Length: 155
Image 1 (cartoon, rainbow, N blue to C red):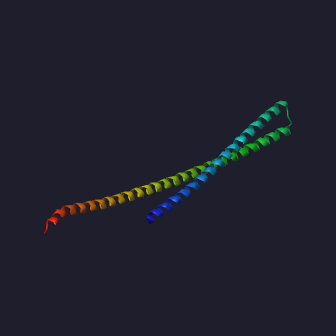
Image 2 (image 1 turned 180 degrees about the horizontal axis):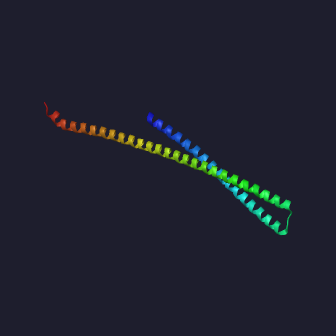
Image 3 (image 1 turned 135 degrees about the vertical axis):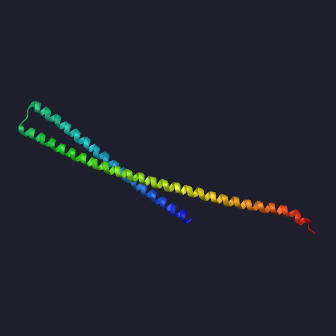
């Protein structure tokens, strides 16, 4: 019985750890999604400014305006590089969280299988004990029936 309580406690702990790992993975997934959206926004913003630069160049612009455009586009390029680095780090974190989640899930499944086996073993032991008790009762009854005519025939 104590083993069953320990196993139940281990299963409960493993389930809590799995839930924590799942929340961490969901958080990392959300951060990844957000970072991808920011990267897409930066790329769209850069493409828009490149179109504006091209249009302004066709109409004619001052050197100062051209410098401002190129400086801002260079700033966007730097932000895109930084966001790509952030996204790569988030990918690594997400892979680690996913691996941890899989490990926690495997541990919980193993404990649940162990508990199921223990329950099955306990039921089989109980069935064997009941069968043994029934066999002993049947044997005793059979023995008494065999002895009964002998006992009645005695003077």
